[in-house]
Structure formats: structure tokens, C-alpha cells
Length: 290
Ligand code: PMP
Image 1 (cartoon, rainbow, N blue to C red):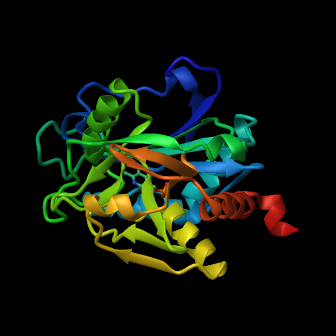
Image 2: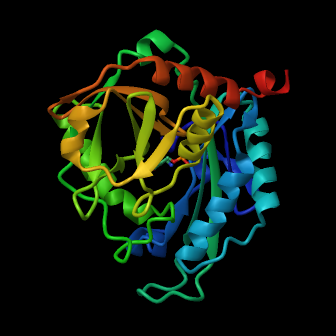
């Protein structure tokens, strides 16, 4: 991934892709002092750019450092690097980390670095294909207690269990893994939130120990606009048998129906289809302006 053509925004400069390097004694690499964002541009416009920039700032504050660019500067930098790379439909990856000035757990005076990379990533518009649903494993690793890990931060360190869970799922032939939380409740997938339907009502776990995704909030609003009731509550895995539809939501996943979670089966249906359509319209800047 590091030898591509193109440019990366790196500490306020635009540098050739292959030159965006850092030192092996980077604190973020050794101690996980790194936060990032995952965003998408549709038709050249990042969906909810400012909300992502605000979360980027908040994640850093939770990890006890401050991003040295304002939210407006990050928004402008993202737009600049998309234009510079000539991209229209792309993924956007801002990342911020403590540098290599201090090599110890304590690193209060290390420099905070920020980079923004963008790459082509067309969204999957084939609704029929999406409606076939993806298959999820149930992960062995659990989302930690909120007193153990700062779940509101999109912090690189929290993705260690996501990578382990996703690798284990892929080895068994699944697309992704559903993670339970420290209490055994249904939580989320490795990079997306999860929602279910029962009798026309959406049920989704309360986001009290995992990321309350921007897509999750968007899809909940879209459902409510359609008059669909949404209940955020505690969901135990044995309840999965009673749900009709299941879909995961996230910047990368968008709205993706699920056909299977371990031993449980779901049938993607009317609510999934409606929300795929509504989300597609919501993120499309032309459809919104019209
Ligand atoms: N949970 C996790 C663990 C994620 O990585 C993501 C993707 N950022 C989400 C949920 C969904 O968040 P969003 O809708 O803001 O992309």
C-alpha cells in the first residue's frame, strides 16, 4: 500500500505517496497513541466531513493529546488532498499520532503528527447483491468494559481485537465477526455497528462500550423519518433467533444486510432495502441538492 502513485497530506505539506514515512521509534507504534478516521467522499464531497473531523479531535483528546490543526483546517486539508489526487468517490483516512521524541510510556512533550491519505473506493451500488446478505462469525474476543478502554475514541489500539476477530472469521470463511461485549451482550462488528428488525421495529444494542458510529446515527435518523420505531437496548445473543432482518452499518459497510450470524439465520427484507436506498440518497450530494 505504501508504493502507490499520488499524494498524502502530511503535517501540513503535500508529499508524494511513497515519501510519507515515519521513524521506527514512533510512540504511536509502540504504545498505541494513535487515532484515526474513516470517511467516504461521494461525488467529490465527503459525507459528514465536519462530524468526522470533530470525532478525530475528540478521539485525540480522549487519548490525552491535541491535534494541532482546527476542525476547519482538517476539513480543508481533506478536500485539498482529494482534489490533488483527482479523486471523486474515495475513502479518506486521517490519522494522528505521537512522534518519536520520547520513548517511554509517558510522552507528554512528543510532537503530534497528522496525515491524511485518500484512495479510490467506489461504493457497492448493486442492491440485489447486497440483499443476498453477508455471513458473520461470533468472535471469541469481546469488547472491553468501558472502564477498561476508551470506547468513544477511534483509537488505533482498540483495533487489535478487531483484527484478531476478523482474521479468525475470515479463516472460517465468514465475511466478518460479530463481537459480544464484556458482559456477553451483542455489541458490534469489527468495523461496523449492527441493527436488527422484529415486527417492523428496529432493535440495536446501546452504544455504551463501542463506537456510536456516524452511519449508525444517520441510519437511525433515516429510519425514524420513515416512521420506523428504533429501540436501543441490551440484546443478548440467544435473542438473535427471534430477529427477522439484520444489517451492519458503517462508513465502509454503508448499509449491508446480514444473512447469517453463527447458527442464526436472517432474511434481508423490506427495511434493509429501504434503508440501503435512503442511505444511498443521503450520501449522494446531487440527490440531496435536488
Ligand atoms: N464500530 C467500529 C469498531 C468501527 O471501526 C466503525 C467504523 N468507523 C464503526 C463502528 C462505524 O462508524 P462510522 O459509521 O462512524 O464509520
